[in-house]
Image (cartoon, rainbow, N blue to C red; front, side, top):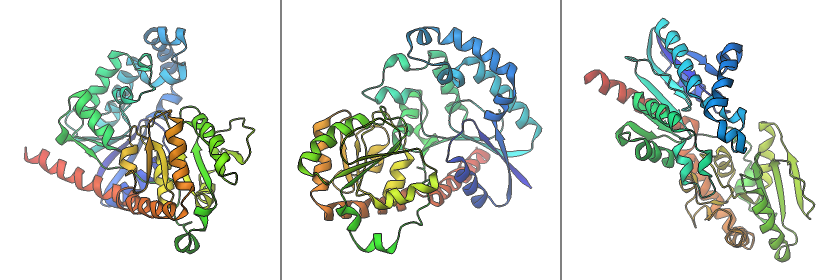
Length: 378
């Protein structure tokens, strides 16, 4: 049986869905799941040596506090080169038709073996975020190693158009070798009930939902500043916070904190508006989830958000950190439950067309088969 090397370079909740759609779209192939994260964690010598390189290559950032050891762990030249050596040894021992890599932390390509990557970010894309500090950009040596990842891939697949553009514009990769295939939801959407479909009751609730763990980066403080103004006009409005656990003593703000993924649907189903005024967002699976639960979106004009939100159709995008714009966008929706319902329906249509794992699987299969055929004919 023909084989595919499916290489995980970084833990991500989408891996389970991604592996599933690979099995469904390549049923005649045996898929070997190779987990580089586990390989690193089991090798204490690699971890120890890598710590030395962290101290050397990120010394200024560590001293200034702009970098933490945990953040820098997968971003040293040592870990890049050591992981490439290890994965190459594994790939040489197998008889693979092609290799497929999740994320773009390492170059796991083997010369002569067709290789594909699927990523939600590039390091250089961070420069497009207004609140990103340049001292947080990885060292130039890492940028050069990252460039080789895209150069050595037969095709680079991305979650969003902004990352696809970054691979072409920042790293000089021919746009014909880069394809945005989007991504799907991690939350089950079968919780959409007939009641939610046929009435606008949920939109009358005036419940604003926030889902994100990094409270500051995701714009949580901006939402609260805006909500204090909103309460003056809509004293019955509320905010529900999932993931983050900030200490807030404001009327009608409910902090739920971290919950299992399978518990999220009940909160999406009860919300009127999804608001995440994030300041740095490579993709954001939660937006897909909110759209699948027919919620209008209020967020910021950065990263992948313009892919998700067509302003005036399924939500609003504001400038990051602009409290006045955020307040006006939320008030516009809170003042009109029918608009919330209309925006929510349009968002659901967009998500159904672009952001399901079945659709992603079809796009990946089509592009991989086409690229392999072109490679053989070249």
